[in-house]
Length: 287
Image (cartoon, rainbow, N blue to C red):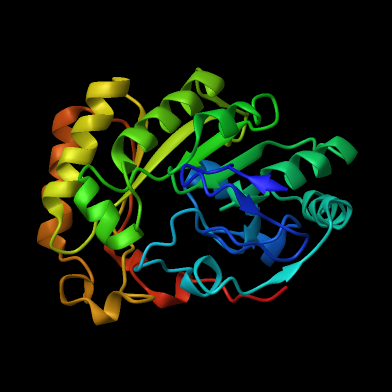
């Protein structure tokens, strides 16, 4: 395949198990972990867990990624769409609330093929970096029920520095706008689990509260009152330990400053407890 699925527009040649694009991935899904996951927002994980499928590789590959082993080093193994379908069936049968596709963008075509074989009877969650192409997202309309995009940066200089991404802010805003268009109003089931909607995540970085405040301001200016998940789970991972400004957790003062601005804007959503900044919440990559 010739791939232009993400905003990097590589026009990469991707074979089944290799490729010459930014992600260096083949066309077959590469999986690092498939298991119930209990550490998403309450309306996603619930009591039975979210059926997480962690894909290897990423369109962004941030230097501080907590999943650096799989996002940048691409740890995992390739499977066919039919095999992916069988694994999703097993997750569904285990009783999870939804099927949670984590960093799935490089494999959109294979995922669509799997869902042509079997579409689960529980919600499909698309859990992504936010650095997405609107044209690719449109291919998912009718397949995805819940979007969980990140909105990482209000500052394109930071996006280039930490994620090697040009024009991140406008690209992510356009992508989030498309997700909101597709999901429209938020819906929950009788157990208060989200069955349709979009939750926009923002991770506060150490020494960069201005970026966070401006990011929240952009979300309010562009989308009114979207559902926002403000995260303080940052710990230095990947290459972050080599970067002085990123080589620590965020402070309570930093988080309270951003959280206070979130409340001032009147944005609804979720806030994390500071105890979430712990390596124990990073999954073991076994599949």
